[in-house]
Image (cartoon, rainbow, N blue to C red; front, side, top):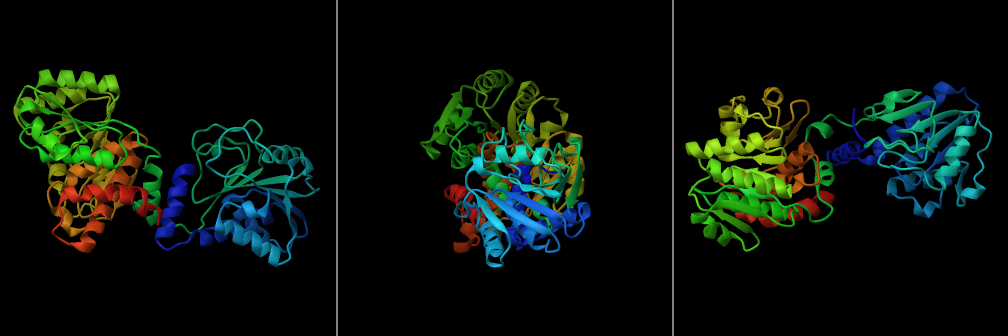
Length: 475
């Protein structure tokens, strides 16, 4: 089962792998035509009611596979406003080939011809709320017709993400959905066909540009709270700055007063909140917990924190009481397996830290992906295992990010990754945020490696993060 949002990301990933969307549209249209042939004999009258998006484009393709039928295609709107190039190309193909394809530019003039089959291709996934004109009038006519209704991907008005279905949506007799079923379709009183349209399994398994688009913030939001520093100062500064580069509006660092000035010196954009003790202690943890809960911060805990006994106890105490979202990295990771918490944790171990947590001890993390998934299921938290290939899993779903460069073995790249996760966690689902962050961090390293394969620094990744997140992901 796959949501509409996730399906759009998979489509984009497939295109990045070399399977263009136009090819997928051809397969989708063929699948729709196959179902029409199942419900009606050759010579039957078919009316396609199409919107101006790719859902309509699928139906334009279907018309070309139904030459044995009497087919009329009605486009709701003007053809020059068709929203995607590939849908427009398939509309133009119908025009040039002499198919009966007409524009409906005024909903008051919508007239559904008598027919045996109606193909509903007005609205696909990603649309929520009651239908507006001209789709509302068209849906009313479709529902009143004495015809078999075949909907493309989902019935128009059906929300494949949030379940907010339109009161005036189309009531389908058959649904042809693509690649995988969508949440809620099984509850409809209709027959659902899941059509394989040729999307490679790698488009779901490997993180790609679609995942970046799905997770990236639309606007600056969130105020990550980095709890780190003491023995080390660069790690929390890198994590906090990376969160800013990934879209956070403010970034806070809680650290010992003895190193607060040094951390502040790494970036004037950071807000450092010092405490008197030289390391994190249980008493300090109580105060930090109160702050994090009061402001509903996404927390990053661990970078540069150290492994003093009282620090580890403070970390246990904090995580046990915290119920928000947290990225757990570096020195804080070892306490996670023994902590019971209501928090949503994204754990970011390297392969050695993963083994110390009780996970598989593997040089090739991708080859051990199934074992890491089983470990995450037992742990009850998301694991982003860092290696030449990163493995991201919530214990049920597993993704692999293949981006990165050899030069990223330099210290600090894991800290930037933790910060990117925190920056994306404000607006994205945790699994989506973790997968996208791994990919963005790796692509940032690839960009630097083009100029200097081995000599770049983790701090240089910071400038590349927004370029990848808002720029290269569009490519």
